Length: 172
Image 1: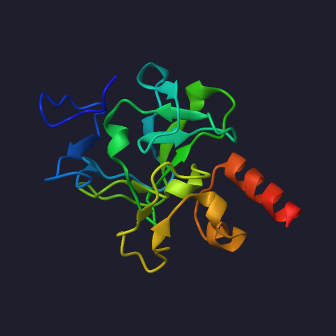
Image 2: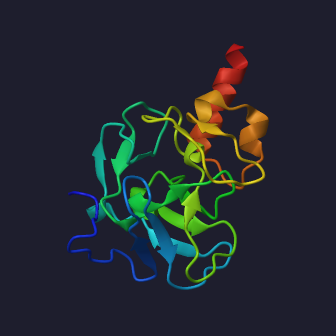
């Protein structure tokens, strides 16, 4: 299933809308209603997810190098921020309970963002971050390249990422 595009766009979720920018990597996902911290923003619906290899559009759901899903929905347009407003909560062993949750208030029209290393151990396509947050890390390579204190500064890190960091720290 291809990611949504401007041509023939059909909204995947009732309170989220893709803002298609000009050129590559200039689109974002916007909230069409206000979300409070803790609100469920969207379910990660099994019919919209497909397991696959690590790619720049996939989200890691477990500790294995092949534990990746393609979102196949508007959620693929959630951009990275070092000060994110949502988390991909993949902590349940039951994939039907996976969801996107607001970490803080998101105003109507606000861009929806998440901290990519919160789910990604080693990014398929590292990049120079342009989030402009006070806590911006500058370059995003994945959690494997961050210190425990850098990760602890975030509102949400997936449990398997924390476990991988703990294993790395033990081996040092």
